[in-house]
Length: 77
Image 1: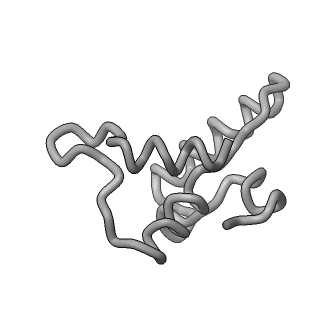
Image 2 (image 1 turned 180 degrees about the horizontal axis):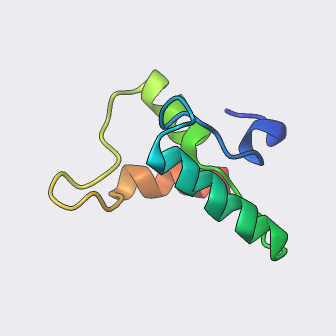
């Protein structure tokens, strides 16, 4: 699993770091950290899961996490 240093820093795994999604992730994480919230970047956990198993962790119709996705998040937190 990802180590603490990896988990605590927002990743750019969603692209090259210049995508709109990557920019919004960084902005959200930065703002939350500035407000005193602990930020846990789940990307490393989901990518580690995908490297081990190709199971889907979201419902195919709406993108919400299924039981596998919730298990990945529970392990992260």
